[in-house]
Amino acid sequence: MNTVMITGCSSGFGLETARHFLDRGWSVAATMRKPDESLLPASERLHVLSLDVTDHDSIAHAIEAAGPIDALVNNAGIGWLSTFEGTSEETVRRIFETNTFGSFEMIRAVLPQMRAKSDGVIVNVSSSVTLEALALLPVYTASKAAVNAYTECLALELAPLGIRTRLVLPGQAPATRFGSNAMALMGQADDTPEDYKPFVAQVMSAFGDTAAQEPTKPADVVQAIWRAVTDPSCPLRLPAGADAVALAA
Image 1 (tube, rainbow, N blue to C red):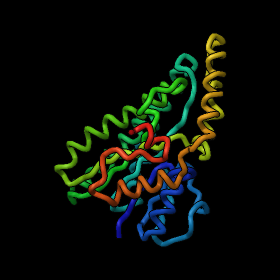
Image 2 (image 1 turned 90 degrees about the vertical axis):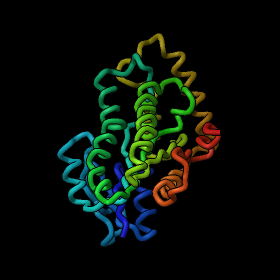
Image 3 (image 1 turned 180 degrees about the horizontal axis):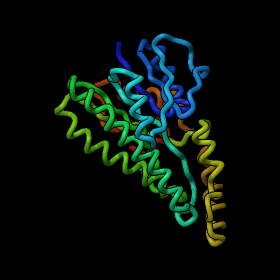
Image 4 (image 1 turned 120 degrees about the vertical axis):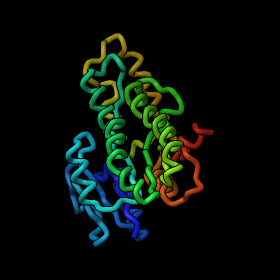
């Protein structure tokens, strides 16, 4: 029986992905900072594990509890919309620690067992904002662009070892808790100078208009992750959602 470990399963894409794999007979290690088994249907194939991707010991304990892992889905992330100048150094570091370095360390933790069996899949969930520059997203975009770059490099060096590496790039998804939280923070970050306020208001208005069009649905992302894990012939980059597909094209 195949086992997938998914980070960030308390809501949104991670939660729906865990349900999808469970429904299809996989053993699922669903991780979250505060485990809540009520979020997923009871199953002998389900292990809800505590995991903070910024904590080395937490990662080691979760990997040990999960047992042999066939696929890793790095989904945990922090959304952040603000001007660069309005984002503190502490916040920048917190975003990179989760979005970028957290996935680094998860991969580092599973690679030895994947190398030992010359098999495994690593899927990194990035973002379509890396495909087109957008205002108020410099820090978040940078953290995800780094994910894109190292995933492409890993794909080259891990392929000879029998390990596949893929990128899923979701589009705008305000309906998820991740998207809602990011929207709520827009223009209200640590200390945005007054000079930016007119521009921030303009961008927020335009962003709202875009969100009303055809946002990415969780099912779009789930299907892309499923394909990334189960289809060896799929491309390295998988845009998810109509808006992401349009940007990629």
